[in-house]
Amino acid sequence: MKQLFSPYHGLILLTLLVESSCFSAKTVGTGSAFHNMVWSEEFSYTGLPDSTKWGYDVGDGCPANCGWGNNELQYYTAHRPENARVEEGHLVIEAHQEKMGNHAYSSARIVSKHKGDWKYGRIEIRAKLPSGRGVWPAIWMLPTDWAYGGWPRSGEIDIMENVGYLPDSIFGSVHTKFFNHIQGTQVTSGRQSKTLSTSFHLYSIEWTAEKMDFLFDGQRYLTFQNRHEGPDAWPFDQPFHLLMNIAAGGNWGGKMGVDTAVWPQKMLVDYVRVFQ
Image (cartoon, rainbow, N blue to C red):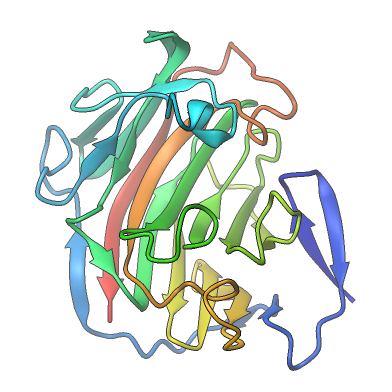
């Protein structure tokens, strides 16, 4: 038996892993076949994020998806250096406790949509996470064209998620129509480190037509395999783009409440690199 974390519901799912399973959580080294860098952002400048590589999701998701579907407390801004800027070689995404729109928190969610969209490859992000109860940083991917319909039919790839009340844990997850957290069937596994908010770590996936590996500091901890059962199980044959953000509170991030004394909080990103 292998333990798979279900962080959205505070459960531990016990699943028998056999050789034919669609996922595994064996921790091994990686011998990547992806060597050709096709896109990168080194953040070697100062100011707002490079507009040729990054756009923004703005607001609170209302009216169609208020709280971004998770009852989050922040309002995402655009072109506002207090929430997203590049300095000293790093992207800084910073969340503040301040009134913004109808919300008590401001933050940023930057996206590479239509500026960096990929099908297959190794996507790696070196980052240092925020800390504090109520923070919810994420590095993740969504489909660019939603070819199979709205969420979760067209898929979601969570390269890294962390919640402040679990400060030493990060999670990688896959969501599809068959496997998603609304049903409690998402494919999820986690790794632990006591230096997530004090040191930079490498978060990455290696994605082919047959499988998706999730890696923490180069070590694989989760594999999701294509069982060729159609897009309801594997919608990952379409281009996806990258999102990076800090949410405040929400169904998961705020599960244990929000400490109003910890803000502002920053996620620092050293680089983003994509290989195919």
